[in-house]
Image 1 (cartoon, rainbow, N blue to C red):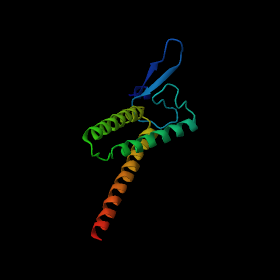
Image 2: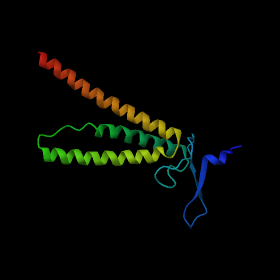
Image 3: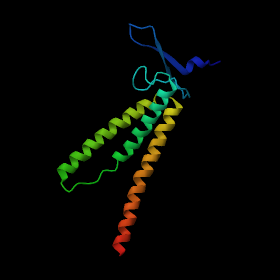
Image 4: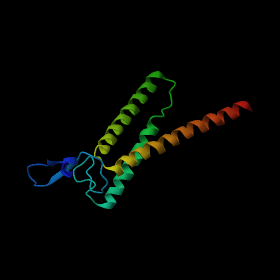
Length: 138
């Protein structure tokens, strides 16, 4: 029979403390999660909500960074695009590490952030295209 202990694995912290952090190996729902930094969000409900809000807006920002306008100068445009791409990849990797906490709330808020960000970016692009085609007809 498989016990619940098989779904997470204890990990020793540093030599100075006797604290033990649990690394979950399956999705779970709890405010007691460690994301990116040891001791954050500290198992407090307010900090957990703040962490969910931060990952939501990071995911929205990633979608905004995907909509880069081309420049007339190819060197400046290429540098701008490369810098924004690097920033976007860094944020995506941070979000991936957050999701790897296997917390359902974190996963849902990251996906929701990507959904909302994509919707806003595409809505703005379609709205501009429609308004431009209307002005071209007049």
